[in-house]
Amino acid sequence: HASFISLITNCSHSSNLCVHSCTPTPATGCTKNHNPNNAEPDPSRNQRLFQQFYSSSISIKPAEKNPSTSNQKEDLGQEDQNRSVKKGKGFLTNMWWANLKSAIGQRLNVEGMVCSASVITKDRHLALPHVVVPDVRYIDWGELQRRGFKGVIFDKDNTITAPYCLTIWAPLKSSLEQCKSVFGHNVAVFSNSAGLYEYDHDSSKAKALERSIGIKVIRHRVKKPAGTAEEIEKHVGFTSSQLIMVGDRPFTDVVFGNRNGFMTILTEPLSLSGETFVVRQVRKLEIFLVKRWLKQGVRPISHRLLPDTEQCIKDP
Image 1 (cartoon, rainbow, N blue to C red):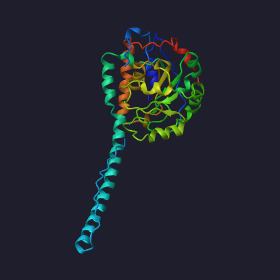
Image 2 (image 1 turned 45 degrees about the vertical axis):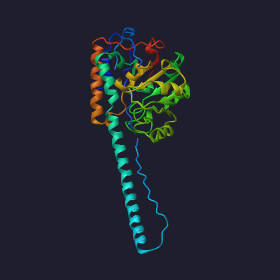
Image 3 (image 1 turned 45 degrees about the horizontal axis):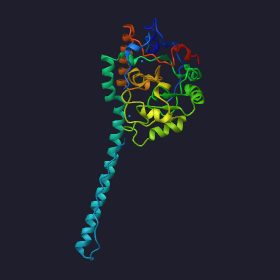
């Protein structure tokens, strides 16, 4: 497929937004609204198990032994058995529904649709990141810390893992370790899958991811790009303006970050083959719109800690 970055860099002429055009080595692996007038010149680029138990119990008081009582007990015993079977089936049905809901939820982000409508009609600058790189290996974590940033928040799917996987994309392990060594415990994952209460109700996906990558997964209730940075700020202890949001989707990660005052870094998706047809089409639309807006001269929001975006990019 055509390079994600090349689609954007073709539109970048006179801009503060830094786009690194190198292509990563192939590998396998599983509102706050800002004033557009404060923007700097630039153009750039692009899921609970809910469970219902019907607890109804019938208690039988001890009675004299006679045929009718015995028959009654047998009938009740059969009733209890039938009820247990139904309950078991209901439990399995609930599990099936939860899994289906989880899958659909990853593809249908109602809050995101509403927010995206606002972006498309009036807040187009919110979809433009401060920095664009092929992947996180190109980010100079040390330089970002020297500039005054205190923490890093990663999206999960297609940013640090392959879509819907719970393990780090192998080539990125070294860079993530470097990030953790620089920012310590102020590194976290904020995802629309693992950690989102609606679809990861028992935090099983979040816990599995934490065990796998050694990074905290923040639990939250609202899907990006809607919602605030409250859970994130509570976790790291710093304001969003001192944090970096890294993700692969302009209309979710970047819009959420820019709405809430983060410095935003857009990465190229790690594996398009792992995405569903719907997600791939939405991504194409996002890239098309971002490219068009850049051609029209829409600029990304400026960030006080990063006036020169080139300084935070390196060759891996």
